Length: 104
Length: 334
Image 1 (cartoon, rainbow over the protein chains, first blue to last red):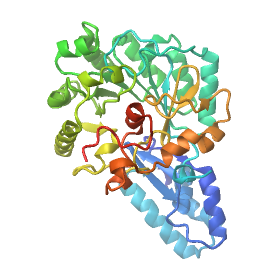
Image 2: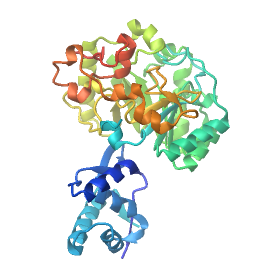
Image 3: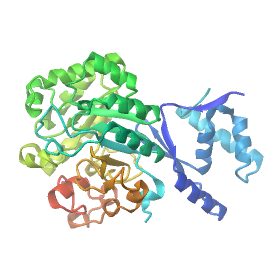
Image 4: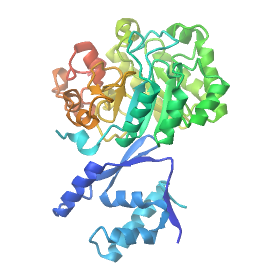
């Protein structure tokens, strides 16, 4: 299976302090799906990715396939495997269409 | 104390970095031409780059003064790019010949902006107080393009060009510039002294922006950017930012040649020094930054429905004219 890599023209960073706060909230049972922890600058426009999206983005380093992403995330988030696979596929598909990710 | 900005951002995305106030030009609107401070040695500047990398700053944009006045600009850029920073600069173009353009390319500059204030050579030269500066600026764009450097054009909108800004866009197209910044006029430094001659009235600003936003919507072959929060309530304004109002002190900070940090180049209030002070303490706790990030409506802003988006407009202009961040932007037409 092909590996996924980020568009090198996109400038980004993980907001580590923010990420730690979100993980704390998640552990407390809060809905954190709309809280961004990764900032992307795409053609001068700013975007945020939430915790799961940010983790997927971070893992797309050209060394991992989609299956590798699901495997890595399954150890981090308590989600049923089939649901996780579907969510990751949909997210990656969206970013591929935007040109933010590509197959290495 | 966390606020809406620091809750999300652990550092600015961009540092606008004045390496030197020295310049080979003497422009009528310059915010810094009359400034003078000790400049840092190269080793200290490289140490600052390390700090910025550690704090995850993404972009540095060298301004001035003229960045190329410093002999070590390429060494600094080489180092910063090597550390992963996205480096750009603004220049008057005078010192950029073919060899310098190639060196800028080799240093990894992401883009180089050239200041051109009028498409009429004589008018640009007069504004810049330097005969031949228009030709040199246009030549610089050509040298940079040939060297493979992405070029931008910066034009400060003022009384000399607001009626003819389309000519500036045509010039940019002709020179295959990627992006044009139509900067709002700031009444700082000489800009404040020459405000009566250069600044537009609030109504003139409104008319300019309405037309310019329309032109932007109709333009597909050239990126046109504005950096003026006062326009956020106008039809045609569709930029989405993660912060409202001025981005200064929120998404960006400015650094003076001695390492002093100010919210932006046009607000002469030092919040601390990057080499002497703990950066996180400055970023999170500076009373000046906190005031800028938590502006309170005053005067006509109190009853204005646009305040939530524009947050009183340009904080630098309000401070320059009224000495108070919370006063309405003097360019506001409402």
